[in-house]
Amino acid sequence: MHTIGITISRDRICAVALEESTQAPRIAAAVSVPCTEPFGTPGDAAVLSNALREALPGIPLPGAVVTLPPALTFLRPMTLPVTDLPRARAIHLAELEGNLPIEDEEILSDLLPVPREGSGLFFAVAARRSFVENVSVQFGAAGIRVDRVVTDPVALLLLAPEDAGTPRDGVYLSTLNDVLLLRVSGGGVTAARQFPRAMADRPEELLGALRE
Image (cartoon, rainbow, N blue to C red):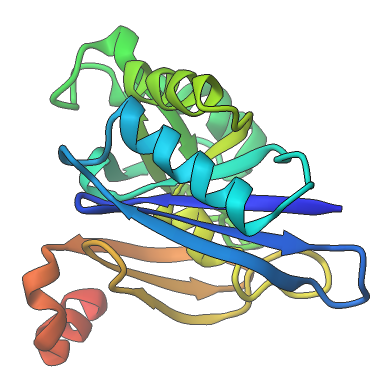
């Protein structure tokens, strides 16, 4: 059994196919294609699909998880009158409406995991609904079924889960696209910041911002 992870950036689209039939998943194929326009086009999706088929001869392409880069999402802290994630998810959208540079009906959002001892502080990650839908359509037309669309913070937290599925405590850093910093404590995110990629060579400033 295989699964595919696709990462979109401004300049490239990358895909990794994992074989999960063994005890430890192994990389069965890894391909990437340049974007002819920022964040890719339907033609780029087709080129990626062909590259995957060549790398996995005779294997039908499985569904994919697509990761959106920070440049296409909105990371927002918010304080809500509840402390548990289910109730916060039910009401957080109202806090975002009118506070993002997109139309309210375009907002597609979810909350990052919170510490076990909740404080009412949450971090929402939102994207344009139309872009998420277009991503699914483009890859679907190229023969890659999109099972799930996630954002860089979610993908980063999934890299080091504990046995219970919660992220391990620590500081998480990603420079694949823009710079993304997350601080995790008690199984949830307690701080989250995004920075331009140009700041990747200034670690003191990044860590200072995370401490604020």
